[in-house]
Image (cartoon, rainbow, N blue to C red; front, top):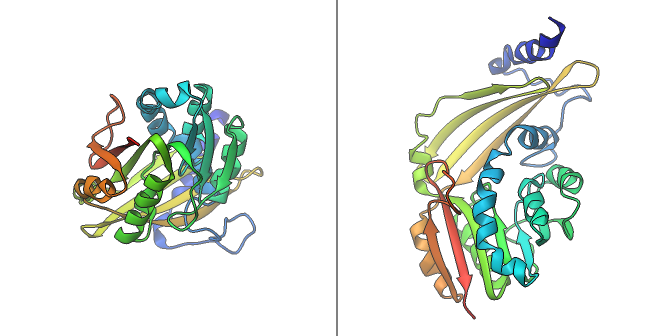
Length: 274
């Protein structure tokens, strides 16, 4: 019976979450000092949602084989807790891993210590270091504030590529929202964390997740945090023409390799020929 207590406690913590209780008057609750992926959601994402990075890794590694053979630099945007970073370094790549979330970077420094550098980088404004490849999973560009910002980030990626360089990133197409227009709320409970996500599509180009997390404290109590994630959805068919002016040939694909990606998630594979 004792073995079931953590899960039962998690289920108890979820009770009444929808009634608007936001116990932010204790030191155990993570405060919203950062917009996305604060301490608790970063931890939950690392522990329970690594499947996307693992699924994408084989296809990305195959695309990057020429870069590895010449010991080129791989710039990873939105590295999160280092799930893909670790796969890249284990395959012998030299990686500069970046993210906008300090909490994610703290996890990445522990989980993927073989990276050449792990640093904070916020798109689209921060400069990108020159690289032989740029990779990203988790629709990082879709977290930017609007369509122009996405265009600026894509242009910055193109300009960061050295001659012969490649980029491979995923991004949310307009279809992403349509496929989730009537999606039900989702909840997942584990022994030491729980997460509830509500979805909304206020307009065709904006998808919103209202995310509530519960994480077990060392003393057996639970803390709660809430994040509201806005994703900008874009018509990915326009990207090849956008980056042609930068000397980048772009292919819009349904996957990096043979993995099955969620509906509406597209892959952009770009190559600089000279």
